[in-house]
Length: 364
Image (cartoon, rainbow, N blue to C red; front, top):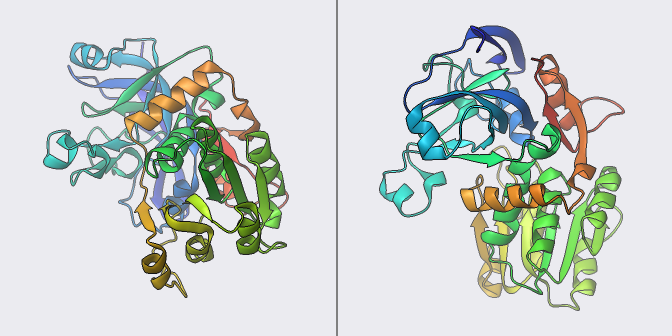
């Protein structure tokens, strides 16, 4: 039986998270309640925490929910193909699924799109984000059933791995034999290595900073052929050397906040190649961005926001197959009460400690 209340960490102001006990709502014919097993932490959690995203407050952060269904309406059970006791991965975005954009296959770009962790507490039933023991699953959600025997901290990687498949394979249409350069060895950069290798990329190159030495080692373990420390090597010359002067077929930019990699991506990519921009920069302009390179090389530049069902499904299959040691990039489990510490650890604000993939594990 469900408890009457759920403990949740609520963001009430920039850089301020507070513990609240919130009522657990009943379920309607088309909704559900899940018990959160794990919630992944990523760069956008930091941006929300800092107030950069200007999201409504107060709100419960957490947009990478993995949980077990504790209550579900008959309509939702039939529509999603799940029932009480099933483990589910919940997609981040809530779309209308009936506008021209959604019906055209781009439901993640819906004009009425909402994101679980950005819905304020003033919107009923309030229990939206996954920094919580329990979470409301809305009727317009997309959920995916997952193997319950997997450790929660591994299963919750469905989100970053889904991003890897969408950003490094689906959007740039990566083909067998392609050379793929991935800028940034964070969790989504490492996920992009895994996805590109699964897609049959011929050569994979990952760039990072000197402080990313351990992450670059993991990139090699996941299948990167070359890693480049951009602080101690000339990345442009090194990539020219690796590609014999041709340049990369695909460049995936997933660095956090740094603007220089966006400018440099135009140097790394071959004529007629594709650059995917997925790392957000806090809406800062890119200094010295030379658009003539796009013209002269006929570069295709594509933005990437979020993950869609095809990426999630590929990620979940990979996780459930247990053939790739994805646990190598999981570094930290935090309790709900340690949410602020989790965010600061990810953003390198905790001296002597750094996370790659981390998650919150609520106490039950």
